[in-house]
Image (cartoon, rainbow, N blue to C red; front, side, top):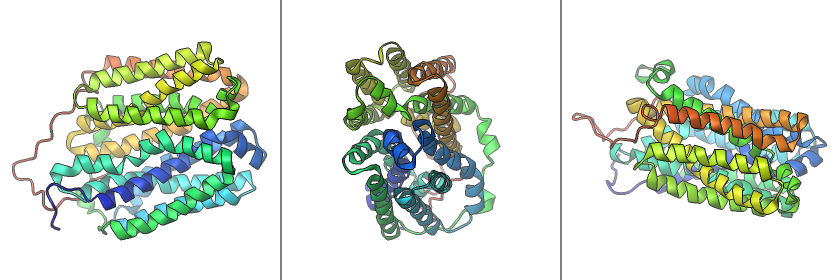
Length: 406
C-alpha cells in the first residue's frame, strides 16, 4: 500500500472516531436523562442509572473473551457488525416500554462495544506507517472524549426539547449511517496471526502498568459515582430545569481540558497527572460542602469538566510509556478497566443515592479521587514518567504495518 508520508487517511480515521463517539454516547447519555427515562419506564432514578451499569458491565465481561474469539476474523465486517449492534440497541431503547427489555438490550450493546473498543485503536494504527501511528491513534480515539465532553450535554438538551426517546432514535439512525461510512472509507484487513500475540499477563506485570490501571479505575469510579446522578444532584441545587445547559458548559470545559492535555502531557506528564487528580479532589470538596448553591455548583462543574477532558489522555499516555512495545495491549487493558470503573461507579452511586441520598455522592467521590491522588503521587516516578520520543528500530520495516496485538 502506497502512503503519503505527510498525510493521514482522515476519511477512515474520522469514521472510526465517529463510531467511537456514538458508542460512548450510547453508554453515557442516560446520565443526563435519568428523570425522563425513569418516568418513561416507570422506575426510580437509581434503577434508571443501572442502564449505564449494565452497558459498561457488558463491555467489561465481553472485551477480553470476545476479542480473543474474534481476533482471527476479517476486521472490517466485524467492526461494522459492532456499529450495527450499537444502532440496534439505541433503536430498541427508543421504542421499548419495558425496563427489563431495555436492560437486556443495553447489556448486548455493551458486549458489542467491548469488541469495538479493542479494535478501533489497532485498526487506526494499521492504517498508517510507523511515524504516524501516534497521530492516527489520537484522531481515531477523539470520539470518546468528545462524547464525554459534548455528546452527553447535547443529547440531554435534545432530550429536554424533544423527549428522551427521540434522542436514542437519533443516535441509532446516525450509527447506521456510520456503519456505511466505515464500509466506504475504511479498507479491509485480515485477522491476526496467532503466532504474533502477546499474553495479557506479561503486559500487566510490566513496571508501572498495574499502578496506572488502578489509578484509572479509581478515577472512573469517582467520576461516574456522581456524574451518573448529576441530574438529581443539580435538581437539589435548584437547577433541575437547566441540566442540559449546565452539562453543555461542563462539556465545553472538558474540550478545553482535552486541548490542554495535547499541549502539556508530553512536556510534564507527572505534573499533569497530579494537577488533574488534585482538581478532581478539590471539586468534590467544594460540592460536598456547598453543592446546594447553584452558582457554586455550576462553577465547580466547569472545573470538574476541565479535569475530565485531561484524564483519559493522560492515562493513555502513561500506559503507552510504561508498556513500550506492548502499548496496544496496555491500551486494551486500560479500556477494560475504565469500563469496569464506569460500571462500578454507576452501581456505587445508585446504592448511595438509595441509601444515603444525593448529598452523600460527592463525599464518596472525594474519598475515591483522594485515594487516586495519593497513589499517583507515591508512584509518579515509575508509573507516570514523561513519554520519551518514539525511536524506530534500525531494521524495522515500516512499509508493512501490522495490527497491534490486543
